[in-house]
Amino acid sequence: MEEKILLTEDFERHGYGSYVTNLPSIWSVAYYFEVPNGLIYKTDSARPLKLKITAYEKFTGINTALDFTVTASNNVAIVRNPKSNQIEYEWMAIARGRTSGKITYLASYDPSTKQMTFGAIAGGTTEDVDVFYLIADGMMRLQISAPARAQTITQTIFEASLEAVNSTRQNTINQLLKMPADFELRAGWKLEIAVNTPATIILDARDISDGNFTTNWNELAIVSIPVYVGKEV
Image (cartoon, rainbow, N blue to C red; front, side):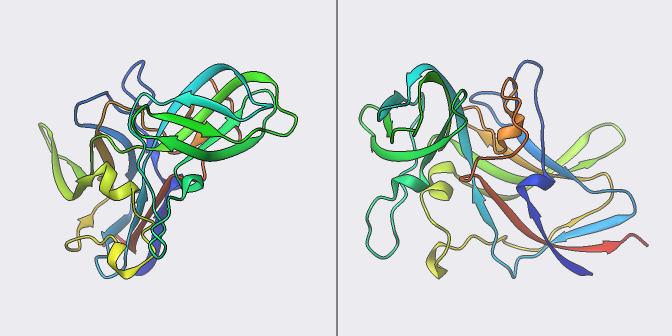
């Protein structure tokens, strides 16, 4: 079998009616990867996986020509440098002006008020702003969904709090995430990212329903899942 990495762009958003991805505050699937016909995938527990899960919010009428502050509906995960222990705000949230089309990064965050302050955008104006931030509220799972005759069988293969996953850089030995074992997925089976959080989970900016984005500018969300791929016999 051949080594491969499943990335964010390999996953499709799930969606539930008017909800873009997940349902709020209950276990529901936000994104999934479906194994193509004729192939077998197997997760690789020997290689580390990386996961960063972002919440999405839109704020209207923000003057981005100056440093601006918006209030998140949920708690933002605090990311610290593993060596200095300093908070790395730029790894926690990213914003993009709808009119200016430019990106700015988090400059400070007050966890007591959930207020996020971003740096001014060059050429900014009063505009709507899209914001992605690493969510600290709730839980996430990687799970396998296998179709059966009368129902779908689901197996959890990795589970953690969103804060635990999002608050680490996952770039040191102590912070690496790994699968507990190898799991096989056959054609038509799905590898799902399920969450239980009040936040709207969006990993790809192109999935914002009214955004009309042609590129994924969300630099914070990471899905990197090591697998093996082979042909179905």
